[in-house]
Amino acid sequence: MKATGTCPKCLCTALWYVEYVGNNDPNPGTQEKALQFQLAVTGKLGPDGTSGRLEAYACQQCGYVELYLKERLPVDGKHIRELRRPQGPPYRG
Image (cartoon, rainbow, N blue to C red; front, side, top):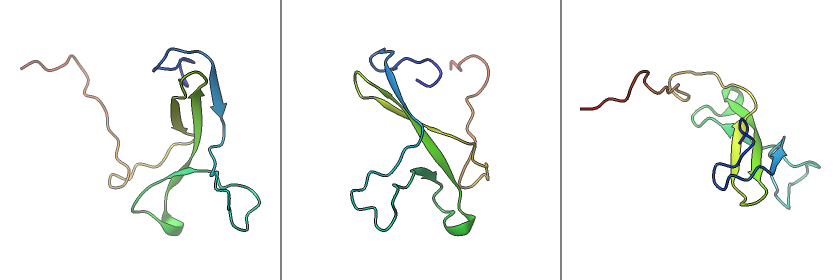
């Protein structure tokens, strides 16, 4: 939806953009503002942990939602691995 401006589910072109995806907890504790959701990398918690802020695109017609990272995360080969589709024509055995 981010690139096409069209919902892949129902083909609607009326979308909502949510710049900061936040926590909607009715009891946020002592904080005045809701915390922004982040994609946290499992296995790397604490001060050395990795996370990325999220943005969302939502279809106004069917409610389909896509989340996107607002910044790139570092690839470490263990917790974050890069996957790529093989180049060339599909293999036919």
